[in-house]
Amino acid sequence: MVENAIVDSDKNASTNRGPKMISENTNVFYGDKQALFDINLEIGQNEVTALIGPSGCGKSTFLRCLNRMNDVIDICRVTGKITLDGDDIYDPALDVVQLRARVGMVFQKPNPFPKSVYDNIAYGPRIHGVGNTKAELDEIVQSSLERASLWNEVKDRLDEPGTGLSGGQQQRLCIARAIAVNPEVILMDEPCSALDPIATAKIEELIDELRMNFTIVIVTHSMQQAARVSQRTAFFHLGELVEVGDTAEIFTNPKDDRTQGYITGRFG
Amino acid sequence: MATEHIVKAYSDELNALEALIARMGGYVESIVQESMSAVSRRDTALAGQAIEADHRIDAIEHEVNEAVIRMLALRQPMALDLRAIIAALKISGDLERIGDYAANVAKRTLVLNEAPPIPSAAAIPRLGRLVSANLKEVLDAYAEKDADKAVDVWHRDEEIDAIYTSLFRELLTYMMEDPRNITACTHLLFMAKNIERMGDHATNIAEVVYYMVHGKSLENDRPKQDTTSGLVAESPAESPAESPTESGSVEPYNSGPDDSGPTPTS
Image 1 (cartoon, rainbow over the protein chains, first blue to last red):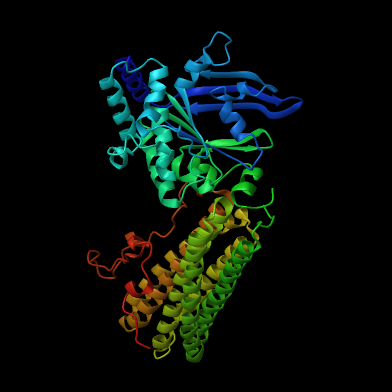
Image 2 (image 1 turned 30 degrees about the vertical axis):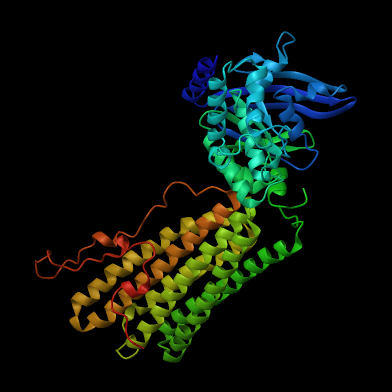
C-alpha cells in the first residue's frame, strides 16, 4: 500500500502542468441564497493556485467544493461539474472519504488532535489501512514530518501532545498530517493568518517545496502572500470569478477594474 | 482608475510623488531652454545660471528616490500604483540626465563665447527647440496619463536624429574648410550630441508613460535615424581612410555627458 502511494505521488510529479482539477459552471446555493455563480477554473498540476477576494466573495466556499466539505452543510447545494483527473467528484458513486484522502485540507487555525505528535500523523494512515506494521507507520510519520520541515524540531518529542507545539509548528504538524495519507491536492484555507511572520515564512517555504509533489490551492487574505507563493491567482468578488491569470500578471497588470481596485486597496 | 485609496495617506503620497515629477520636469524644461538661449545669444551669464540650476534638479531626483524607496517598503504597491511608482523613479532618472546634458551644453557655451561666432551654431537651438517640444509633450503625456501622446513623441525622435545627422555633416565640412574652426565645431558637435541624447531620454520617458498606462512595453524598436556612427569625412585631398568617425550611437545607454568628450572647466 505504501509502495503504491509513493509511486502515485511520483507519477504526479512527472506529469507536470495540465489541469489537475477543473471546475465547470459551478454554482453553490445556501438555501435560497446563491453564493457562487458559474465558476469556471482550472487548477494546474503541481502549481500553487491562490484564491483571493474580499470577505464573503465565495473563495472559501469554492475551496470547500473541491473536496466536498460543503456536503456537511444541509442547506448547501452544488451544481455544475468539478473533476479530479477527469473524474467527476460529485459522482454519487464516489466515496467521499477516499476523495478527501486524495484532496487534503489545512485550515486557518492549527487544529492538531489532542494526541501525541506521532499519533496526529499516524491517525490518517491507520484509518485508511495504510501502514500495518509499526515499522511502516514509523516511516510514514518520519517522512511526513520531514516533508513538512518539522522532523528536526519534533523528533525527540514524538510522544508529547501535538497541542504543546508552537502555533507555527502546529500548523506544520497539520500539513504533515495532511501529507501522511499521500494526497494529490492540498487545500489550504488561510493557513498563515494565525501565525507570526517567521512562522509564516516557514509555511510559505514549505508550500514552495510541496509544489514539487502536490497540487496546492490556497485561500489567503494577504495579497502579498498570494504574490509570494502562487503561480496562478484567481480573484473572486460577490460570488463570481472575476479574473484568473499568472500571478505576476495579476499583480502588475490586472485586466479587470474590480481586481485593480481590490489589490491596490481602493474602493471597488 | 481614478478612485481614491481606502488609506487616504497612500493616495496623498502618490499625488505628492506625481507633483514632484511635475516640478522636476518644469525645472528641466527651463534649464534646457536656458542653455539653448545661452548658445544662440552667446550669453555667458545665462549659461552660468543653467549650470547652477542643474544642482536643483539633482536634489529633486534624490527626493524622488527616497519617496519611492519609502513607498515600496511601507505600502507594498500593486498593479497601477506599482507601475506609477516605478514610472516616477525611471522618469526622474531620465530627467536628471537631460538636466546634465543641458548643463554640459551650457558649459561648452562658456568656451564657445571666447571664440568668434560660427554660422551653424544657429542649428543648435533649432535642434534644441525640437527636443524642448518633445520634452514638454512627454511631460504632458505623463501628467495626463495619455499613452497615445507619448507614442507620438516616441515617433518624433526620428526627426531629431535626422537633423542631428545633417548638422554633424555640416560641422565636418566647416572643419575641413578651415582648421581654425575645429575647436568651436568640436564643441558644437558635442553639444549637438548632448541635445540628441536629451531627445533619446524624452523617448525613454515616452516608453515609461506607455508602460505606466498599459502595463506592457512599447513593442518594436524605434527606427534609428542617427547614422553618424558610420559617417566618414571626405577629405579634399584623397585620403578617406583616417577621418574621424563619431561613436555616439554605441555610447552605453546611461553614459553621461562627461563621457562625451573633454568638458571645459567652468
